[in-house]
Length: 380
Image (cartoon, rainbow, N blue to C red; front, top):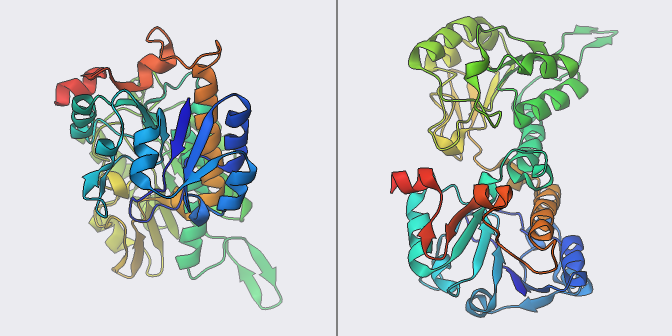
């Protein structure tokens, strides 16, 4: 079975779906690996490393796509402007695309895949179960994003993070407020604490308090109950009344912070507004807001997707692809997720999409010309 890895053409994407180490392991398991020339260079993986891993190189993009049984990508398929064709149109009928797909936000991609006979496994739909933990790419990339969010915010802050006692006087530690205690929020918390900041964290899920405190953060108490999260452990979409109450309670915390990092996402929905323009206007000049939800509508009312802007003396970072700013390790982690998934699907000796398998059932969006995902079908 032939697995192909094309170079990402999505603007600003530096990651590669498969790193040489994982390619070597797949070759040893009987897969043929073809990598587009230069596919890994932005992430720090040379063509030579892929050749040493047993992979072949291909320069012709159309040949790469059309020959593959499985295509491994990071970003959803888009138009290839150079070839004047959509990436899905380059794939052969019956082949399998494994990538971040976000079919609830881009249902037309699922429809197009079904029409072209391309099967799709969405890495953003891997079930949050113990068995699937090694394949959970959303979590692996959120971990990287949480780390980078603190580093990026620190670069724009005109202060240092830790308490420092010097002959010239005492410097107070930076105060960081994190909205959301999921994987990204907890990673940001751990990073900010290691740098010496005082960190406060807010989350709609009561269960998050223990995790926050175990990492040395202070939990901002907002009256909630267990209904605030779904069966998979993700935060559910909240009512306008609750969001208003939450904003009022955290107003003081945000306006006194040096750095505010927002991470709140609801699968398939526009990100909720947590930081209003009024809040930004009340923050101290020189402070920083980093909106990790900028790609999906934003948690900050005045953030701009893909841009860093200054308003009321506050720097607002709307970087929409934080993992791509740490492409080496982000690629390594994503590649391990893909390897574990392929190994799981091949555990009986042959690669198989078994619809009775909970991981396949949860992540297989399109199969044999049909959109299987129920919520995506409803949107269509």
